[in-house]
Structures are given as structure tokens and as C-alpha cells.
Image (tube, rainbow, N blue to C red; front, side, top):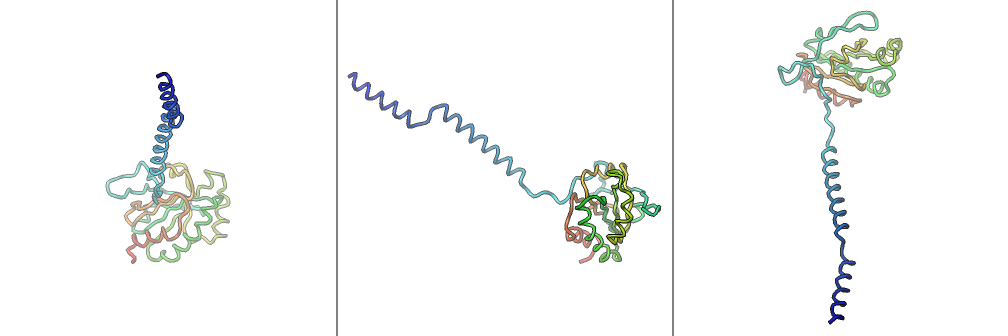
Length: 206
């Protein structure tokens, strides 16, 4: 009788060795739970980034598109440019600086857009942040001549940076329709085609 009990006990011990212990099963369940959480996080954060960046918090929101804050800023030759004077035109505002490599790469595209759509109602205003970022305002005029910039440039200040939502990286651009409403906000360098599609639509060009 004792021998049968010993055999039964040995069989149970063998089964326990082959199977998983309670502690091991607990660790596996915990690991599977953490893996599921990690997968959900990756899925929720792996979507395409929106083309439009965040809009300034102080815009009026009476319509679908917010109104661009008005400004009056100096040009390198001492004149003044007021945004509201361009009502009736489609305007691209480009926040940039001479020391910014992506800004430099994007400027030829803006020059080309001005050449092709300037006489159809497009204006581009480059807002230089040289002075308030690195004190390189003196480089703007030579830069304009070197690149052959064919659209107006103004010197930006902290007020306009804040009015347009706090520009945190350049280039940052805003596309404004004929009614002064912002229809797109791009953060970072964008291909010319992105601007062209919006400009053509805003100008009513097929």
C-alpha cells in the first residue's frame, strides 16, 4: 500500500516539473498584459501626422477658418507692411531666418510660386526672425539679393510670434485666403505642391 502511495506521489511531482508553477504563470500573464498595453500605445501613436499645425489660441472663431491676426511690420528698406492691406489676395506667411537650413531650402519654392501665381492674386510675405533669435538681422538684405527673393520681407518681433500661437520652430507658414482666414498652417519644410494645391483652390484656379 505504501509503495502505491509513493508511485502516485512521484507521478504528481513529475507533472509539476513538466507544467508551470503558479509564480511562472503569473509572470507570463503580467508580460502578456504589458505587451498588449505597448501594442495599443504604438497603434494609437503611429497614425499620419496632420499637415496643419496647431492654430493660435487668440483667433476669432466666428467661421470655420480663423482670422489671421493683423500686423504692421518694417521691411529692410524702412517701409511698413500691414497684413490687412492684402485682403482680396491669397497670402502665404513664411516665418524664417537666414541661419535656418530648411528655410533656405524652401525659399526657391516660394520664389517659384510667386512667379507663377503672383499675377493671379498670390502674395508671399517672409517674416524674418533673425533679430529675435540670433541677432543676424544685418544678413537679411544680402541674403535677399543672393537668393533673388521676389516677395516682400519684414522683420518679425516677439509680439507677432505670440499672436500666431508661439512659433517654436522654423520654417512655419500660414496660408491665408482672400477674406483673411487661415486655411492651412504648416510647421516644418513642405514641398511646393502642398502650397500650390491650396493656392490654386483659394484663387479658384482649376
